[in-house]
Image (cartoon, rainbow, N blue to C red; front, side, top):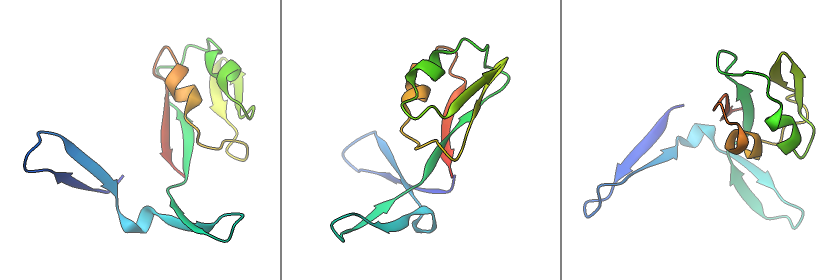
Length: 96
């Protein structure tokens, strides 16, 4: 993902911000414009052992297990709960 990296002069931390072309503007239910970066979970197949922890964690039921996990992109909201819980670190969030 292309990004702009910014480092504060008084801090060793580097902050990464998305490029403007990756940000989408949506309108919420109160007609406010909100800027978001759409994300989807993605499986790293070489790391997935099919343990099923992600399936139990996913609030939308977007993960299917056939030996290894796969993501139903139409159901994934990009919340990241599966990524946080995967013991094998086989899930990542990627730009949609």
